[in-house]
Image (cartoon, rainbow, N blue to C red; front, side):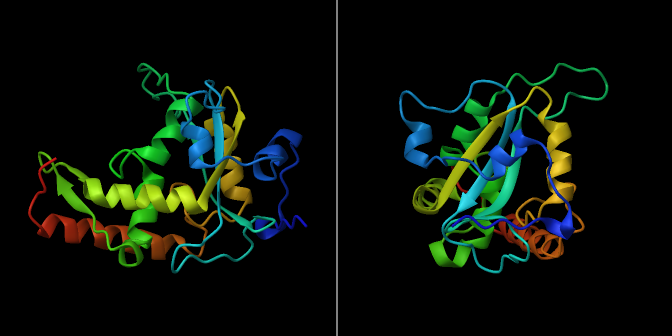
Length: 210
């Protein structure tokens, strides 16, 4: 049975948004990365559901879908520059696939998950390459990808201006893994501190070639 709870009693009225957070199907890493990937090549939003909850995450009022819990939403592309610069041409296809196979430097979701799962997976955030980038090194990112393969599933929704809808979702739902615009969530200071500590520790360690 599907159970869904809304943060602070607010509701998301759009039928499309209901499809995003209560989708008829969620997709695995293998689905997303296959040759004929089903991920849309248009702008939009994506929602991440988890079979296993990373340590310390506060789940109060989170959306649940059968045995899955919604913890994070994101968009692609990001909002256009306010100064009139060139907007990003990324699509859902680019971003969702990157979250599943990229690294923590380019994926806020991977950075957050890696920091929360650091002890469980035996991985540590490090400075890599020139020392300006941070990731969990090649082996660490592989372990994180394997964890996501087993526990993280995703849905998406096409939208021409996803940054507007993202703000609405973060205000309306309990999304503990989102940081930007989510200062009202009780897990926000905890997650901010965990990520800050991981970055501080990485700066104290030698740079890893890569």
